[in-house]
Structure formats: structure tokens, C-alpha cells
Image 1 (cartoon, rainbow, N blue to C red):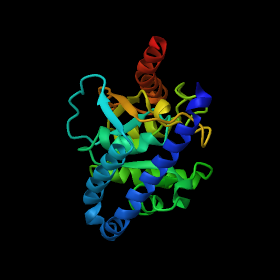
Image 2: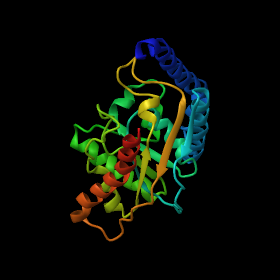
Image 3: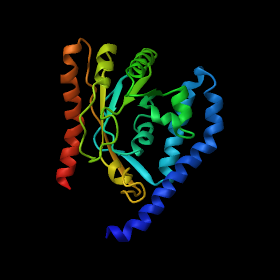
Image 4: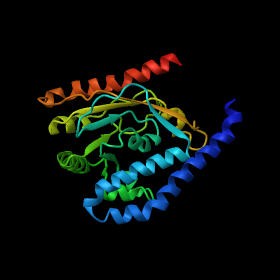
Amino acid sequence: MKILLTPFIIVYRVYFALVFFLVLLILYPLFWVLLLRKENYVRVFKLKVFTARLILLLDFVWMVYKDDKPKLGDGPFVICANHASYLDIILMYRILPRKRFLFIGKSELLKWPIINIFFKKVDIAVNREKRSSGMRSIIRAKQELQNGWSIVIFPEGGIPVDTPILAPFKNGAFKLAIESQVPILPITILDNWKLFNVDPLLTGPARPGISRVIIHKPIPTVGLGKKDYLNLRQQTFDTINEPLLKDNAEQ
């Protein structure tokens, strides 16, 4: 069956990539002008939300909330989600369209055409192999939290090879949340690994469909200190992982 579907998978993957880059290319001049001034960054976020909606619509991907959304308040938050697909990044603007946020992402994104403009200007790039880069990213993230921006971090540090099984979480998100005394907002994305898997490049799973999302209740960090990093990390891991385990067991 998979052999029969392979041509359709390849066509959809190529189509997905074309839609993604063509939409961004068309809107690139507007992004470029807005990014000339920091005062426009909220407008840039709103334009990103519109762009993500358009890309998902053209790629025939629909998002639904699997459970009722909790009352989140104004924030800001350190937003932690499982990372199973490049689709996660686009979908995040559909998940939280009214909660302005920045991504912390790997420095390799600075080399990607079109996308790199965001990590040069708005989002936060970090080279995990350089301690100094990590420190600078944390300092910048703290400043942006103080300015009312939430920060999105995929705490696995990348897309695991055996997704949807979670990789161990790294400490950065929880250190940032505790030191800034802002809540962790856990998010579980259930289906993206089936809708657009990274590996293999041309023949990995890819298809239109519905992406189910669960926004969990925020985990407060007020009063927590260094001794609480590991407990907070484990609590966040368990919160995100439980629906994944349940969903996979039911299939």
C-alpha cells in the first residue's frame, strides 16, 4: 500500500514546499518593510498569523482543539510543545493567534532563505554548541518576557528520530521560566508527525488532514527556584506526553 501511495506523497511534499516558499516570497517585501522598525513587531506577528492561516488553508491542513481551551489570562508564558514536524512552527500561529510570541530556534535557521529574516530581526537564534550564544539567547528571552512577549521553545531541542515518542527535555525552557517567574504553557500536538514527517526527505509521511491540539493549563512558577528545575521539567514532560501515549494506545 505504501508503495502505491509514494507518488502521491512525493507530489504533496513538493506542493507543500512550493506553497510555503511562494506565500512567504510574495509577502517578503511587506515583512521586510515592517521589520525595519521595532515598533512594527506586533504588526509582523499579526502578519505571521495571517501567513500561517493561508499556508495551512492552501495545504489543506485544519487545526482543531481536542479539549476545551483553558483560560490563559494575559501572559506572558514560556510555551513548551512537542516537536514532531516542521509543520509545528506554522501551526503555532494558528494555535495561539492572540498571544504574541517569539520562537527560540537553532542558529542553522539563519542560513535558510526567506525564513532567516525573522531570526535576524524578531525571533531568537541560538547556537547550542556555544555557551555564549546560549547565554545571549536567555538574556534576550528574559527581556522580551518583560516586554510582554511569550517565548516558544521546543524543549526536546529538535525533532526526534522516533517521533511521536518524546525525546528527553532540555533545561533551558524551565530555567528561563523560573528565573523570569512566568508560567509554563504546555501544548500537545497529536497529529503533525503523520501529516508531514521530516524523514525520509521525499517519501516520509505527508498528507492533508486534521491536526488535533491540546492546550493544557499553565503551570505556575512563582516562588520556584533552582531546586525546582527538574520537577518542573518532569511535570511539563508528563503533561505533554500523557495525551500522546493515550492517543497512540487507541490506534
